[in-house]
Length: 452
Image 1 (cartoon, rainbow, N blue to C red):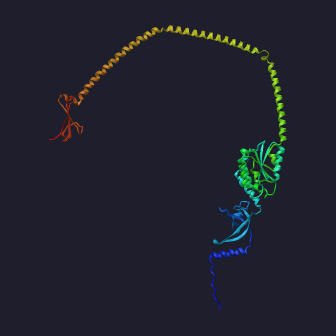
Image 2: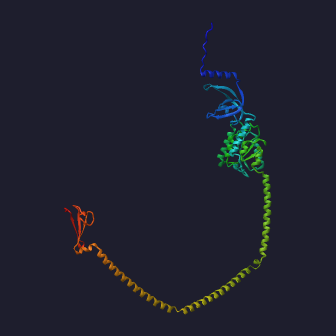
């Protein structure tokens, strides 16, 4: 007889745990997955979350901060990569994902891709523009060299500079030029030299190292060093690698030397060329001075041969003669002008005499007196007429004055309360005060106590 078995009931967490165990035990410990990045997001913690997709599917991925720190290029959406890691299940949400431990771009090296990405970024920001580059001094007296003290580059640079321009003083600032953190140390050294340059008085900096692989030269391709070179107030020559090597430091620097040895050629002039040029300029100067002296001598002889030097008083005597002639002309002109003015004055005197102004003045005086008398008579007549008219108007006005009848025994009574002249009983009330005006401007005040 068969016994009935009871089915096992699992919790959600148990199912997810089983799936996790199956996936982690059934799949290889490490898998390499090729796909295109989508939904890239870097969390504030430094962990990265994204997906890899192809034509038919999407795979969730996670990359923890320590692993991402080893990635040299900048992951971005749409970039085809090869991710290496293991598949795991996030039990709380029942979601599986590929935990990425390493990541490389597909078809191109990670360092090359990182180099190209940073070049595009810095070019867009203008760090490579010629407008920002500082001119290299023609005759630098103090040069700072930032490189490894144990490498051949420092000797190549020093030999090249001293062979060409021995008077230049060199100062070595040893820095690591390869390995983890080298870029940050070189950048810090550049910033420190700039900060202390009021005392150091450096005219120029040379930053570089000898050749090597892309990995060896990578410190000179990092963003932190590129920005330090761009921010430097001291002009910088980048001398990294061999002829074929080009780094981001070369692109940002104010000048680029293809090798450390060539840095000396770029930094200082050749003493032999300068001396040769000085000799040439000195010869030209001597020829120019000699030619000017000869021309000056010839000009001096011409001056000495002139009449002014043979008979120096001749010019003075000729000027004196000219002054005498001008004085004679001036005297004649003054006499002629005076004669003309005397003639004009005589003509005016005769014209005035013919007019006889005294007789004309007498006639005008008689005429003025006559007009004055006539004006006075007219004014008197007008004033008398106005006085008579004014008297007539005054009489008519007095006849119309209501107070003129007071002299014949009449009075004028006014209601003091209302201010109106009393004509009928309707103009007063019991208790009203009355003002009665008599002749001679006499006023009697009364009060109404009873009315009929």
